[in-house]
Length: 113
Image 1: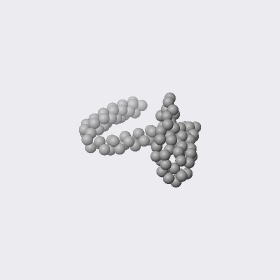
Image 2: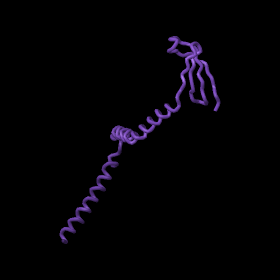
Image 3: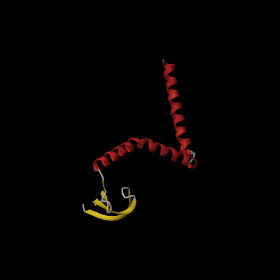
Image 4: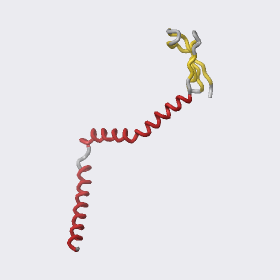
């Protein structure tokens, strides 16, 4: 990883003005920002960021099934008018036939007893 410094114009809260700042990077990660006028330095606490990102990541993992279910409900409701009718009727016919067969078998068992 390569350390990098960049100059950028930002608003400094300490100076209460827009001033030149030096931004320090470690690789592609931000390390610190220093005001060139008042030399106020803001550093990024990696440990704190990791805990915040970990909490957010865990929350996203735990809510994923619910979010996917909601997305699927919306997609099916939107696409329902475009489904062929056979897509719904055929499974219902098969279920009805299975129900009729089971009903006949149960009726024969009751008569034999």
